[in-house]
Every structure is written in C-alpha cells, then in structure tokens.
Image (tube, rainbow, N blue to C red; front, side, top):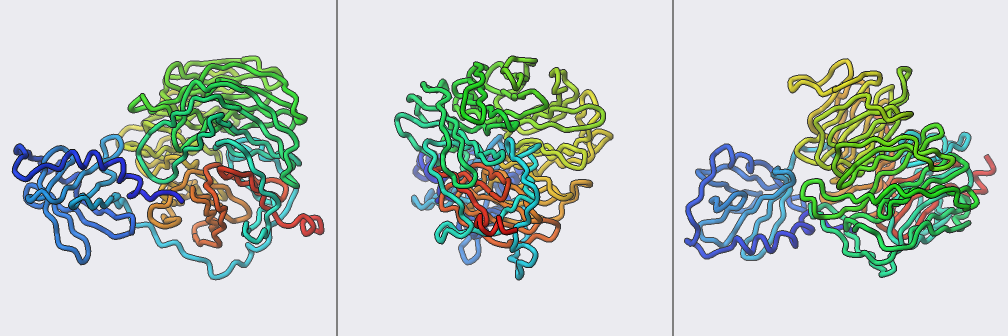
Length: 572
C-alpha cells in the first residue's frame, strides 16, 4: 500500500525537526513581518482528515482544531515556530518556495498537515448502472503509442468492460508476469501486445509510491537487461522476447520511477523502443527481428531545481507519417529530432533550451499545417517535417511531465509543479511568441487559460467535449473544453491517495487507476458519478491500453488482460 502524505513526510522531517528543538530561552530574538506570517495562515488537514486552522496571533501563529486546545507559536526561524515552553514546534515546507505542508512536533509526537486549497465536491456513487453494464464492440482500433492514437486515451467501441475481479477471474483474460521494473505503458496492434522492461542484475526493486517531495535516486548502476516483449492479445502468452541491450546504465532512476519509462510506438509493421538510460532507439518487426538501432546519446534527466538527483528518462517516441519523433530534454544539450521509420536515419535535429522534462510530445493537426507540440518550461511547437520553430508560450512549471492533448481543433497543455500551474487551450495556425499579457487570459491564439489548476504527473484527458485533469492527490477537475469553465471538482479515493497513471475513457466511462491499484470508473460528462471501483491488487503506474475487446493494465509485476469471455465476445 502507498504511504500517506503525512507518513511519507515524517521520516524526511524528523532530522530537521530534531535540529530545531532547543532548550527554552536559548533562542535569539526573531520576528517575521505580518505579510510573511499571513503566508502560513490557512486551513490544513491531517492524513486522517482532521481539519486544522493556522491563524495569525500577535507576532506569531496559533493552531486550533475541533475539540483541541489552541496552541500558540512564536517564530524562531524562517518557516520554524515554537511554543514558549519549547515543548512543541511547527515547521512549514513546500516546493518552489510555496507553503504546501507543515509538521507539528509535540514532545516527539509528529503530525503532518497538508494545505487545503479547495473543498472538492463529495464523490457520488451511482444508484444505477443502466447503460454501462455492457461493453460495446465495433471494429478493432489499434493502440499504437502512449495513450493510444494522438495520446487521446479514447477506447470507444473497443469492448472495455465496466468491471472485473482478479480474485474470481471475472473478465480476466490473462495475468502475465513481466520481470524487472518498468513504467512504460503497453501498446496493442491486432493480436499482439508490446511492452518494455529493464531488469536489474542486482535485483534491486526499490520503489516508493505515495505523496512526497523527496527526489531521491535509487543507487543501482548494476548491469541491466533492457528488453522488448510481444504477447498474444488473446491469451497473454509471450510470443517472443528480445534483449535490446545489456550493460550498466549511465544514469540512476527516481525511487518512484524506472529505467524503462518510454512507451513503445508501432505502425503495424514495426515497433520502436527507446531506452534513455543507455541512449538507444531501436526498431523491430512483428516477428522480433531487429531492423535498426541508433545511438542517440544518454538521456540523463535530473531534478531541474537541485540538479543533483537523477530521476530517469520518460518521454516516449511518437510516429508521424514515416517519421519517429523524439523529445529529449535532459541535464545538458536537450534536443528534439526526427528519424526515418524504415531505417533510423536522422532527418532533422534541433537544440532545445530546456532542462530535463518527462513529457511526450503530440501532433496537432490543422489545415494551416501540422504542429509538433512539446511541453516544457517554455511550451513550443515545431514543424514536424523539418523541426522549424512555429510558436512558443509561457510561463509554465519548473518540472514538466504531462503530455499535451488535442481535441476540438485545439491543444491543451498543462503542468502542475509550483509555483506556476497553468492550463492553456491553444488554437493552431499562429506563429511567434503567444505569451499572454499579465492581465489577459485569452487571445486569438489562446482560446482560454487558467493560471492555476494544472496537473503534475497524470496527462489530462479530453473526452466528448470535456477536459479532465487529475492531480497526484486524487483531486479531479472537469472543464468545458470550449470555454474553460470548470464544471466540477471532486476527489478520488481517501485523503492521502496518490495517482500517477494517466486516465483513459471508453463508451461514456472514465477509468482512473491509482498507485495502489484501485481503478475508479466514473460516468463521463458534467454529472459525475462513481460507477464501480476495480482492484488490481498491485501498484499501477502505467496508463492502460484498449483495443479489440481488451483493456490491458500494467502493474509493477504483471501485464493484465481484461475483457469479456471470448466465447461471449465471439457470439456477438
């Protein structure tokens, strides 16, 4: 199970808190200006859901909660407060200089508090599943790259079931073990499922889910086997396995990541894989024969702020006509490039003034010419045929993960790392710097925008006129894609639940996998309801794939095929 936000922060703050505990009366005089004190005031919540209020009081702060005596604190340092007796301390922390959480230490009893930014509407449970019990089937449609065609996450007509049960086997086609640790998503074409992994010779499976701010790297530079698997979509049997490379990775991974994060891409004839830790881009045919392999350089991705921690590469290759497009933002010498699908020959390459990012690019198709849209600290669009810059846009977050998504002739771009957490809806066909003046939220190029509300890790989902943004902490917001009006905001899971996988949709339903393996299925549209919750019984970090009567969910240990019994499917 994932650690809650409070629990995960406790260990990291123990040493800090211990360091600020001193004998009463030994502190030098310290004061904070009223406007600085006001930054700490507000509503907080414990990991058990108890609400706590921090208020300004005289030259310090007071902390109160229902049924508890008020505690008064005086400042002793920036972000650090103590009671007059010295038996309790209050320490604030957060990313990028923001106040996002606090910890109370009362004689060694630690309580973690997270900032309450808004009150989401309670998640309603549907009283009827009418219209959702069956899984409609039309012609099979491939799921060729990250989040399917155009990263849309749309599985309409692919026979995705509403519910399943791993314990009883209901609607479970297969559960195939996949060795190693990988966060890459599966792709599907016809009767084959493709997936990658990286297997450590040291057997290091260190992995930590949950909500936390630590950027620690896993110290495993042992020999790894970087592999591509092809599975039978009907049975889950492994048809073939290919070792792309064996050797020591040049970079480490984040403890909530892997060395195989990039999702493969396929055109129905070839499968392209990318392993940034060893700098290899390669293509195989559907029988497992290597077609070509290219060294594109080690993609060393690090913490863009601190710079020291290595976090691992994640951006997936995408296909455009006969090209493979790669966004390679790394510690130094970031670039974007195109390679011939047939041979791997480089067609173009352009330098990018970007720190490390973990976002996959996307194509916005338009009559004025297609645009390759890349997310980053500066959002940019290029001509996918030659790499020439078309437009740029800012400001944006310092750490960027989410992939741009397209819908209704626009591209929606977001990021959720503070202090800048924007949402942009951009129209195609414009050129130059599209950055808005500080007092405007739209223009000819920008259909609408919000300064806040962007999501950090999960990629948004555009589906049937609405844009769904799920944050790491389970806060789900729904916007009208045409106007940017927020329709609702609710919470998935309990306080402390964490989400990393990107959601998908099918036949009026939205599928949201949590890190702890719950898949929340909601009714799509402005009237939100929880239909069912399905359990995967393992950690889920990868985005599902849907095609030909099958929903494929990758857990940390298995590839799970979910679909109605094949006999029932064949009878339709």
